[in-house]
Each structure stands twice: as C-alpha cells, then as structure tokens.
Image (cartoon, rainbow, N blue to C red; front, side, top):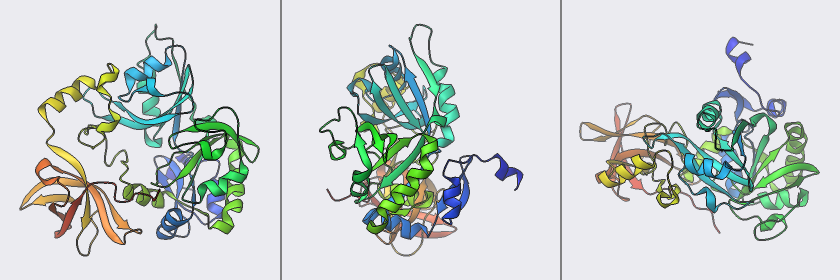
Length: 378
C-alpha cells in the first residue's frame, strides 16, 4: 500500500465495493468506487430501473438548542422557518461576498434540532465555519456527527417498489403514514429491514428515490439486503461516475465545478434558494448589491453539435477571445450526445444561442440549453 492509499478514509462498505469489482479511486480523501460494471450501464440502470450508491462519505452537522433555527436562518440564504419536522430543503453556506462556502441540505429533525448535510470535500471546513459563528447568547451547539451515519442512496423509477417491503415508518409523515406518503424533500424516521433509519425522499440523480441514513454498523447488511431484494427488478450497485453523469443531465450543481468561492447564487442560476425577505443572513448585503448592479455572466447548459466532448476547464470562445469556461462536460448516456455546463457572458446565455468551445485547439460548435437536460416522467 502506498503512503497516499494509507491516508484515504473508507466507508463501512469498502469491502463490499472491492468484492463487487468496484474500481476504487481517491475522492475527497475517501477511497470510493467510481464504477463497477461500467458508468454507462450503471447510469442507464438508474434511469430505467434502480441503482444503489454508497454516499457515506458525505458530512453531517447537528445543530441543536433553542436558538438552532435562528442560527441557521442567519447562516443560510433559504428560509429555515418554513421547515416543519419531516421536511428538508436545499441551501448553502455563503461568504460575506455571497460566494459559496458549500451547498447543502437542511433537515428539520425537531423544534430545536436540525441536521445539515454537506459535501465530503468540505465537511471539516464547514464545521469550523459554522461552529466559529456560534455566539455565547445563541443557545446553540454545533456538532460534527458524520461518523454516526452511513448513507445509502437508492435511486431510480423502481426504487420505491424495492424499498417498500423492507421499510417501516414510525411517527407522523407529511401526507401519510407509509413510505408512499413521504413526498419529495420530505423524510421520516423508521426502519429498513429492522434497522433504525432516516428515510429521505431526496437524491442527486434527477430520479425518484430515497437516501437512507443508517448506523454505520448496519450498512453492510442493508447494502446486501437491498441488492438482494432488488435483483429481480434490475437493481445494480452504482459508482461515483454514474452519479456525476446523472446529476449533470439533471442540471444539478457540483461544488468545485459549477459553484465555489468565486460564484454567487445569481450567477449559478440558483436564485430560487435565496429568500431575501426572510431576514438577514451571511452574504445578503452582497447579493442585494449584485442584484442591483446586475451580473455579467451566467451558468448555462450546452449541447455539442457534432463530434467531440467538452470537459471541465475547456474555454468558451468568441472569436479569438476566451469569454467563459466549461464547468462540467460529459457524453450523455440518456441522450447519446455530448453536453455540459459553462459560465458565459449574459449576451451568450440565451437558450438556443450558439457558442464555441476550444477542445485542445479544435473549435466545437455548441447550442445553449437551459438546464436541466433531463426531467423524469411524473
């Protein structure tokens, strides 16, 4: 084992991935499977049937106390007061300049308890950032509880049918008392095959499905149980490669690509996560100023016209001038064409417009498309 390999962290499912032939790679300091049978096969399985992902590398921060709601209201741009127990929303930690510290999910666990789920690459940074903003009078405690959870994502049109026989829901659920009653961005406490779990109807693929928060000791057995229960329905284990192509088709931002500490929600077309009328929050003044002044660039989708694939970092050209850059690009297994996302000047951001992307000295013509590329059938 090399020094680099010895420093990588492993999820409770590492042995399962190796046994299944997973190709393991370094992802944000974790040794994770990028693929098993192949990215295209795994991608299509999720779109057509179901796939099971290990995303236990994600980080979780627990915010508790009588001031927990007000604290997160001050730290995030979305409106935490609108979350009732059993609901979650997409939000962010922003800098004073309104650029991204990270994007995240906020779960309302109870009146004085919220769970914040953050990216693996930013978990330690996010904890320091949030904990460092606790003031003595806040009545708040911020804990890094990442080691308390394993996280499995069962995604695809058949996900609910696979999970339903194994799931038991306890307590009130928004819209009903069974698995089917958990609406999008809702969650419930319950059990999966007898193991305590938080069952959340969320995901990062553009498909229906659930993310299951479990005790790490229960994860290997439930991984096996879910794969066994879904085998006849075509469920397969899926790696980070398919997760990336799926989220890109669904127009979902990835930290370090579409969003980072140089981009704002207005530029990233994520203004819907910003509730300016919900009170003060970190970055609000900068967002107001940028809205007043106007943005000069915007994140757009594009489809390559012809042959070739544009990848992250490839320049968007106007004549001999570099006017933008590709943030993510791939060959789409669903549409069988090359597509991606890029930041371009506003005058080039209208859907249907033409841009050119320089791929190692070769100009690829592309058409601007408003993400998402893929919307699942309802």
